[in-house]
Image (cartoon, rainbow, N blue to C red):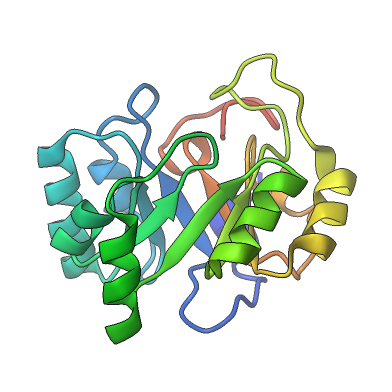
Length: 203
């Protein structure tokens, strides 16, 4: 079966934006360091709700492996690790102002989560570098939650006004159904060594 990493090779994101994104998760992937060590150079790792020691270890790994680290919801934590900042859609982010001020002086990646039009509008207002739009397909991260599906997802991408990374239930086969204009592919299970069924458990 085609892998997500293989599918990502056909993408042409804007300069400085990773094609492949591994998401840490406090329940499904509380320590993504082993999975991150297998990522290709230039891939991104998003630390979401992880223990401070794990995030610090990820930062060291990212420097060694030349990965792009982002920290979710904590601007000061992102600055402490020399990382980018990811803004969740459904909860606030601490330390946003210090991060935005530092971003004026040096290149720091800023991304945001979106699940529909409201999240995309917020991302445009904030001037983020990329939006993680989800869920494309049903995902084990949110069992029973409705997925956008590839056609609605693509319709939202056309309205986004920012580069869009696909997230939610992705594997290699699902990623192949999305257009080349997709800026990147993000996943948990599909990049962490899990072997879910098609379009399930890889969000």
